[in-house]
Structures are given as C-alpha cells and as structure tokens.
Length: 144
Image (cartoon, rainbow, N blue to C red; front, side):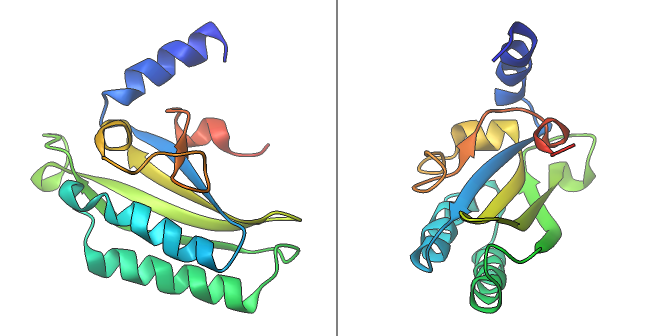
C-alpha cells in the first residue's frame, strides 16, 4: 500500500467508520464457511437470524447463477453495536453485497465498522477461510 493508504487503514482499524471486508464463495461449502464467520459478529449486534437470512440469500445465488452471470444482490439491513453517539442507540449501519467474479465464484463484500472487523475473534482470514480486510473505506474498493 501507499503511505496514505497505510495511514488510512490504521485509522479505520479503531474507527466506527465502515471498511470493506471480502469473502469469496467458490464452492457450495463456501456459503457455510461465510455464515460461520458472520456469526462471529454476534457480540457486535449481528443476530443469528440475520446470518441465516444472508446464508439463505447466498445459497440461492449459488443455486440459481454461475459466476459468469451478472449478479449483484445487496442486503442493507445490518446494524453493528459500536456505541457511536452519532447513530441511534449507538448502532452503526452496515451492508452486504454479493456479486459475481467471472471464473472465480461470488464475492461477498461486507461493509462493517473498522473496529468490529479488527476486534471480532475468528472473523478475519485470507478471503476463503475468513473475511479479508485491508481496512479501507468501501468506496476505495469499488471498480471504476
């Protein structure tokens, strides 16, 4: 990374501002692995019901589409309990997007407060065994 990106990432690790975390679903078993990593966010306000809903949506995408299909599904009803006084009840909004990656599978992008991504046990990984996070804002990770 560049100096400015390293500095930004360091700031976002301890911030309630959103960062993007990614998971690649390359096999049907990947849905279950992704769901288990999302379940690690329960201490931060993500409910099992939300995890089950996301897993059901991901399973449906996997069942009905191939990575060659143009797919983008967004779930924007996630809230993270971070004690942020600027948001209702100290909760910060988050979102999850599932999109195709031709020839690879389906990318899951979770917009999550940086402090949650950095502190949630068993959440981070290489993108297939846990969520990969460079601690950069979602807009910096979007294709042009």
